[in-house]
Image (cartoon, rainbow, N blue to C red):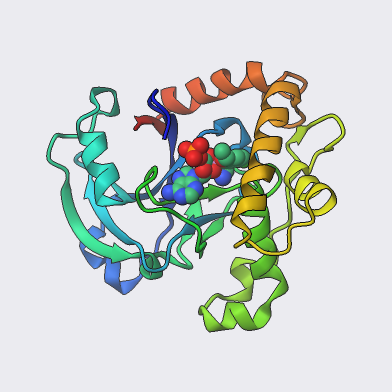
Length: 254
Ligand code: A2H
């Protein structure tokens, strides 16, 4: 943990109707999985969302019509952040586990995939961000390795109750060009540089994250979207502001 607060962007991933039976009390509301990211400029490349199967989540009413699904800790933090516009005592309308979220169809801001699904990731920390992570396998090593594992192991999918159509059709979407690493920077670093075999290889993944994060941010160029051709450094604040202004995201710090 650093000394300075980390400034995240919470991406509002809308849960599509019809809701599952368990969500009955949320009928008539707009429900979002609230995913915390440091890379809002990568949202074009989303292929799914990640949740921790055994993680505890809640559906928190943040205003008259909107509900955010996230950890209790994140709901409390948000309530004390004025810029978030979340009331000081967020009401939990429904207690959930990650398992209840797996398979939910989502519509997420900027994503080229119009519908994506919530899937399990075992390395999610419930005491960081919201406990919900948006998956961008082109640029995030964790996302790349976890999606690869699910895609390549039908028996593992079946064990977890994951339907093929939530996983199999989703390919890496190139969104940023990085010198040497190319436009699937996470794949390049995981396969060619570090030869990572499993999403549980924490040490190597930490190294992969450092490499892709630094190089992607300092040397990357957007190849898609409104700011195609611009450096990631320039595009990031512009894309973030737009997501915030259009109500598709909110600021979150911890
Ligand atoms: B990032 P830091 Cl494209 N548990 O978003 C595990 N990981 C979490 C999390 C949690 N509770 N909450 C957020 N994260 C992930 C995009 C992305 C991210 C890309 C590339 C790198 C990257 C798409 N996933 O992060 O420990 C989220 O993944 C690598 C640094 O606070 C979030 O940003 O520095 C990042 O970790 C926050 O990590």
